[in-house]
Image (tube, rainbow, N blue to C red; front, top):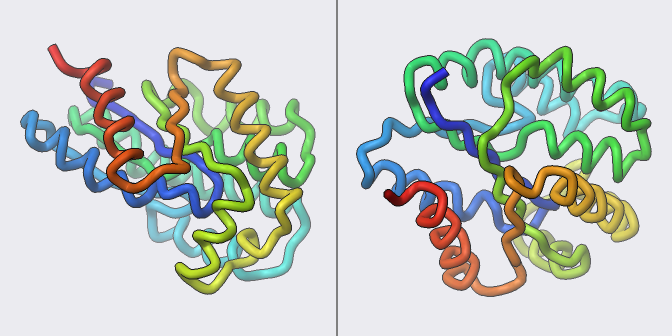
Length: 204
């Protein structure tokens, strides 16, 4: 694998998706071949599963298994081929999101998540994860004016507090990979933090 894999994480409304294009432009300016993807989704099959997860009633374990089924297809058909081709792959969410949402938010056991991650990812993991951290109430205010809420976005603030806490726990466990971005400021302020991380990691 000769490419570069960077993921973007954070609770709904944190603004991570806003900054992916700017990061793509930064790498393209360096001459990188950049590919963007997302989870849940990223392949025709995974996009179909995304629609089910975000819109259809289901139990927490069913939700988790569908997320990892889509992830497996994504890893096999998009992520690994992109890395093998030497591309810079920028992904809006990856496995950290399952630990945060289904683990922290839904309360599913971490050993189950860890086993699924081992099976599905094998040795595929981002080299850098930008975690856009934002208080749950502020994220909810942003979401309210942006779009109609899906099944997960309709959860209460306590749910998103648990999700945020799980992201913090993941960051503490992998400080070299996961970099916290304070997402409470303006787009320009947050973007400046992101660019500072990129310059530190990749400028030579």
